[in-house]
Length: 454
Image 1: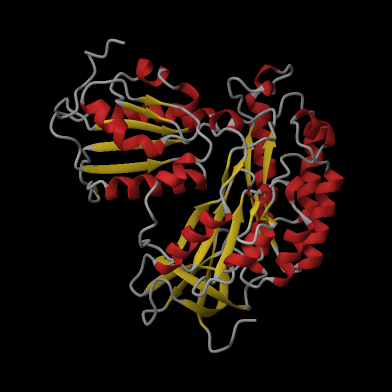
Image 2 (image 1 turned 135 degrees about the horizontal axis):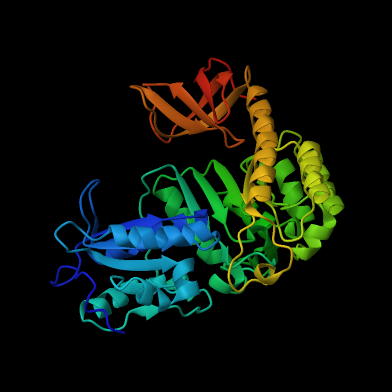
């Protein structure tokens, strides 16, 4: 490949500073944090805010078409006014899907590394510095975790922890099985060791991550097979860890044990993200979703029996190939029936190589726009209703970051709502009881309570 006409990054003994820009899902955020920790262990430092980094890593998402286009736009913007540029690495799912094609489309990219190979990033930096080929999209089974450094002190009291990767579900619209590989669970010991390191570093809330996180299985330290409910219960024993969350779940992996854990483990937060994608069985079958509307609703009913105050979240796709107006109306019906606290909703986006991309009866963009607007209006109404119902309640929040105004801090309720509170006497990482005094569509306002949260 001839890349002589690409802008050159500054030569030298290697990059001293770096910046990681992560796009997409929480697993990308986790991967970005781990890359930063790995480079820090090798003596590199994160570039200061506003400063130009020697190395820029674009940690990419491939779920939606526009996200892919954005990567190439961001690559182009990295060339400076004087014609120089940083060393550029493209990581993540776009890197996995496109491989060396990225360098053919964007000749100023030095490194391409997939999500299962980023532990080899330091070696790839050396290859790029020497002008050698620096493309690595191998998918070794879970080997990257053993090669990563131990967790360092976190800047926030919350942290992500990937417990499994990959997916075996092969939904017809989804690229994850092709970019993240087969479903593989990390070991019980590795997860607990990483969790302990996070808690020792000041973390008070951990969110367990996986493409199908509730499919995690593994042997515990006594050789007994455990599911994610057993793992959550063991994590709950860690002193200093106050809250446990997890995402993203699949309906078929919502086990009896996990449902029960929501009812009797207080550290497991009363929030469940359980995507259904459509409210119509024919569309679900075409998507290769292995649940039905009825089986999904029965799971929701059982979860609410175990934990009556649980908040529900979901994912929806509108405009899947062949979706009729009546089938879309079925999606509105399930939204009305479940009553979600929040949701993610998207127009169907054909991804090259997925079965749905070649299906007949692709839906016109204007029809998808109209359906998405109607769906989001219904979801937004429910979110407002859920937030409004919290007013007058006393609840605990974990203070996570500073607000816009002096003395203002922002924390999360157990139901994942953001709360703004003026509390100059408290600091980030504190758990405080607040009275909710007002609600907006996206956040709540509270004041420090003299009452104990229920």
